Image (cartoon, rainbow, N blue to C red):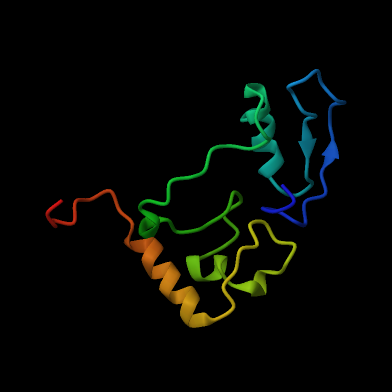
Length: 116
């Protein structure tokens, strides 16, 4: 969590549970840990979290992050969100943000019509 949400300061809701389960945590005013309490990889003996998302069809996605707080791909990649924001993976140059956002929007499940 420290890499994908550096500002996360969760409170333990339930004490340590028997391995491989981890404590159920809650971050006030953020739904991320609420989801983790339900979908928890520690049940499978893995690190806490969920599977990586597919990066398909983002052109139709109107908002981003678990709480829908980021209005665009460009804003998601903008360091102006701050170093403690959830998923703080940024591109400092506007042109690079625009290029990556355009690339991400181009990923689709539709056949492009090109030969394989």
